[in-house]
Amino acid sequence: MSLVGKKAPLFTSSAVVNGDEIVDNFSINDYIGKKYICFFFYPKDFTFVCPTEIHAFQAKLAEFEKRDCVVIGCSTDTENSHLAWLSIPKNKGGIGGVTFPIVSDTAKTIATNYGVLGGQYAYNEEGEMIFEGAPIAFRGTFLINKQGVVMHEEINFFPIGRSIDEQIRTLDAIIHNDKFGEVCPANWSEGKDALKATVVGTADYLAKH
Image (cartoon, rainbow, N blue to C red; front, side, top):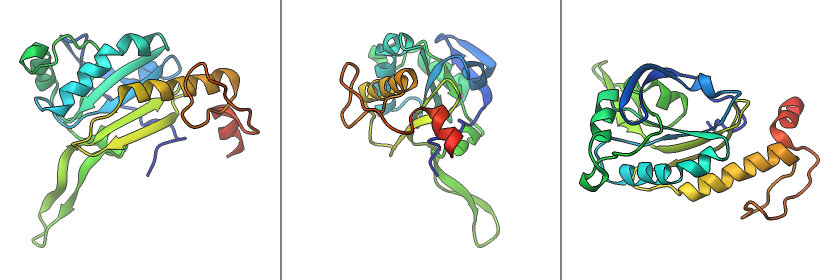
């Protein structure tokens, strides 16, 4: 089920921050009420499409930051795997130079709570627990407002990389709605005209539903 319009699932987990430091208690809770959040999942470290997306987020990091938005990545790999990948230069297949936090979800609980885990646990005919599907995360992206509400989600299957520019455009629309109470039509981008509406803004919506 979609998380749009609902409170983002909170979590505390191990992560690598600033590209070189493992912390055991990284928490998304620390940003709720303070920042917009772009929280994204990718399938696996040391792969092919994933580093292109991670580097693309890093290349646009200043654009997110000037919008008062933090970028946080996450996969089901360990924090040690993240750190090892971060220690390898970009021109050798690594993600060296990436500075935003990358969360470890080895228990797969974060991916499960966000609805992006590529499979599920089940039982076979012998009563043994098995995993059906892929025990890694789809390419999920969640834009969370300062009240901790998920305003946008996008989930791509493993082979399909996402557009970082589209995440920024959508973030602009969320911010515009928060500031001016206007709704943003198809293909809207910052600087274009928006529309007045009877029900506007997350606070109004939540008060009426």
